[in-house]
Amino acid sequence: MTRFALLVTFLTTLSAQSVADFAQHLANEYRMVPNVTYLTMGGIDLKLDVYQKRNVTTPQPTLVYYHGGFWVAGNKEAAILNFAPWLEMGWNVVNVEYRLGAVAPAPAALEDSLCALRFIAAPAQRMAYNIDPAKIVVTGESAGGHLALALGMTPDSANLDLECAADTSLPKVAAVINWFGIYDVADVIDGPNRRAAAVRWFGSLPNRMEIAKRVSPMTYVRAGLPPIMTIHGDADPTVPYPQAVKLRADLDRLNVPNQLVTIPGGGHGGFTPEQRTMIYANIRAFLTKHGLSK
Image: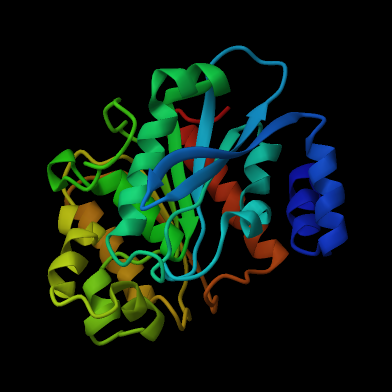
């Protein structure tokens, strides 16, 4: 088994104490800058963590990660195992928090995510953290996958980043790695695949279907999008696998570079070490194909 495969297997079996030990090991190769405030909204400081490669001075490929939880749960601190393979690949990583539904309903999570992307693309942050603005890849699982898709697909004309503090323009992401994210938001809040957790993001908003359309990546599918890879289990009980199939069909129709990695019998994450090794082999090949390998 390769060093990379061993790492993936190792990460999936860590105890809480082992996580702390592994974090210490990463300190040898990475400088971690925790809880950088990228935006203040309603008296709340929204923060991100930066994992910056040590002993380099040139701009680096950078992954921006958004955690899952149907926009109403989860936190960035619990996400390190999900992006640790990117650290092994030598990428910088930015791990983002955003307002959850109990604090601010839709579209707040997407607005915050857009602001975080603008923040790290600003000249001061690019220089401080050696971020290559031409090699920013966005990713996340479940709701984080939705946010990653939205960041890659939402045009400036949607006006969802008007409250951002950064005065730089929204960067064009180089690629999207979507782990079982929601493509059609309306479907999971008031459609055949309605999910109670998704509904909570909208609360009692009277115009929730209008907002659902605004935050839905499907609304903005068009030619010229960045390359998009989707990883999805075909037995996912939470985010319907047919959404991934529709996304692939829509992107194929418009000649947008894309790939769907289907996990036979796979659920909502929780993939085996062997499956995750296969997934990351596909991710590395995808990055190489599109000129993004490190």
